[in-house]
Image (tube, rainbow, N blue to C red):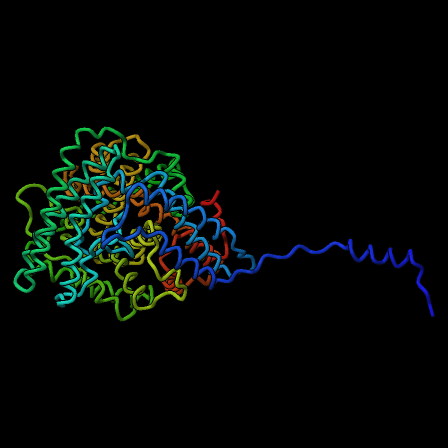
Length: 547
């Protein structure tokens, strides 16, 4: 028998015991697990409901803010190495939403600083995936119901309207902030709610008297809340903006936009100057043509708008701009404006002044309604993109495209038979750049609300945007409530230019507009930096936002 020396046996044993072992690899995560986390996250970020009223008390918000760190850690523990780009993009969507809630708690605190946050009743639809700005959970979105109302729907709305007194009572306890402009403009929002409730009550009283009674009760509660706010307005003296550093963090880490406060200011000024230069040259070119005339009757306006829709859809189809889908025509007609007589003094709202002169610029901007219909009829394959992104993170995509589209289809030839209409396109761009600068300067603490409205009015041609008019008063309030939204129209347009440039460069000589638009339109209403990565394979725009 062959004997192995004892020392050799011991040596072999020691080698086996001390052999290095590979550390255990973390379990691979799947996109399905991310979807599960996303669904749980969406439930977590909602406030708790107590007898039909959302709880935004200091205690509840402190608890939510504390728990948020655990959700962020769960997301950061995901191993996405090897995932396809579209799944990595979904991870960043969840990342951005979590940052949005973090910023709400640290900086915006709308439940503490902004009375308009507590508007409980909205009668009109929003043209983007989710109502713009910070809004209270559980609010009544009337367009979500069918019309005429079914009895069950009327009963549901009445039951929810009767929660209004409790909502406003909680608001009285929560609103301890010192943001003067938000407070004062918020009073106006609550007063507008009261008027909307009265109109709604008058509308439904013949069919649903109990619903009308509930609306009147809610109106009374709204009036009392507004009076309470007015009594305390004089004591509010603080700023409402978030400051430049916070603004840049929010733009980059929540909206995933590759810009800073300072770079947005430069770009907005440049676009404002370009709009004015382009307008003046267009006016000179058209100087021998008769001026645009506004529709003067309901019949004239209705014909002008609906003939314009027919012409617009035919143009998109004949020029092979994008694939025409069945919903597109009705999406525009369903949202067509109704005629309102001119006021005794001043002008109609800014966009009415445009639309009454020519329907084409706003039909182009109403790509919004294509987007909303498409998301409903053709939901994205990813559940994470089927839900409207929180904190209006979709703004650069939705508002950026809608704004860019006005000029893009003009350059494609939409307005060749309407040369003076190009002037309206440039005026609309000037208006968006000017109001964006007002919103930016409010957040940079360089202007107050009044100064922002005056700046915007000063830089909008033809006197179409009076500083005291409803349009700019509403817009500058909203942009103060929601950082970056005011800039998103123009900044999103610029970032879309960058996407088109790189996408086309990669297909030099083989760029097909319809293919680009169809591809772009089916990827979901997500930030442009994520679309840029998905559609080009280049992560640089997102990296600029994250750094």
